[in-house]
Length: 308
Ligand code: ATP
Image 1: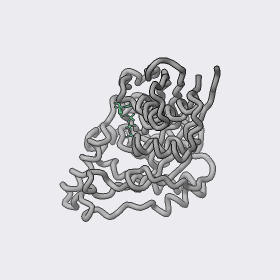
Image 2: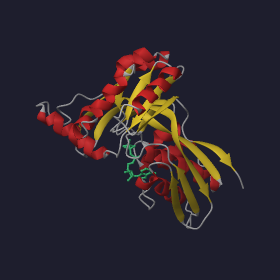
Image 3: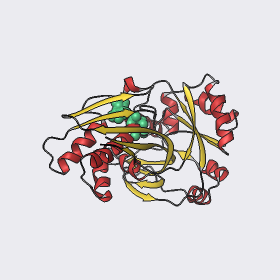
Image 4: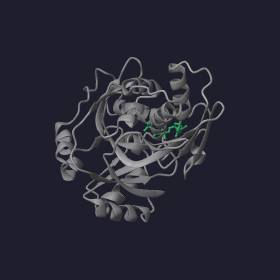
C-alpha cells in the first residue's frame, strides 16, 4: 500500500492571451501550492478501480474519466505493463471543479503512488512528461512550490520564494467548468470591443512586482500584485462570487481573488491568526459553503506512507 499527499494550487497570477488557432490560450500562470490537499492510496488489486471519500465525493467520477485512473493506465502503458493492477482510494479535500486543480492533483498523486506500488522507479523528468500528457495542470502538482507556467501552463519554471504565506479559500456550492470560463472570458473581450484573438490580446507575461513579492516573502506586496484574467468571466457566470470576494475584503483580507477558473475564492491574510479569523468570518457570512485557512508554498506530490 502506498499513500501520496498532493497539494491544491492557487494561481497568484493568471494572465490569459488571445485564442490560438488550436483553440487554446497562451498563459502566464504563476502556480502556488497550498497545504489544502488530497491523499491518494494505491493498493494492489485486479484492473484499475477507484473509490473516494470527502464532502464532494459524490461529484467525483469513479470511471475511467477520473484523472487518477487515467494516470495509472498511462504509467502502465509507458512501461508496457499489460495488466496493471491497482485500487486507488482518493481522500478528497480539494473542492471539485473549484479552480484548484483537484483532478490534476489526483492524477499526479496516482502517477507517484502507482510508480512506487509497482516498483518502477520512473525518473522525475519522465513522470513530468507523462503528467503533461494527462493535462496542463498535472506537472505542477508533482513539482509543488511556486512555479511559472507558460504555453498552456505545462512548461514550468520553479520560482524563488521566501517564507510562508497564509491563505483562506471560500468554497462555493457547485463547480464551474474551466472551458466555459475561458469561453466567457473570450466573449467578454469581444463584447468590450477589444477582441479575443492572438492579434488582439498582448502576450501575457509574469509581473515583475509579483515575482519580487514572492522572492521577498512580502504578503502586502503580493496582495497588491495578485491578478486573474479569468476573474471577470467567473463572476459573470456566477455573480454571487462578487459577494464572497466582498465579504472577505470586509473581514480584513489583504486581497481577494477568484482561484483559477473559480468558483473557489482565495484570500491572502497577513499571518496565521488573521487567516483563522478570516475563515471564521467567511463561514458565517452566508456567502460560501465553507472556508478553509491554509498556507503555502508546500512541496508537490509526496509519498507519506508505505506498507506491505
Ligand atoms: P482546474 O483548476 O484544473 O481547471 P478544477 O479544480 O476546476 O480544475 P477539478 O476538481 O479538477 O476542477 O474537476 C473538473 C472535472 O474533472 C470534474 O467535474 C470531474 O468531472 C472531472 N474529474 C476527473 N478526475 C477527477 C478527480 N480525481 N477529482 C475531481 N474531479 C475529477
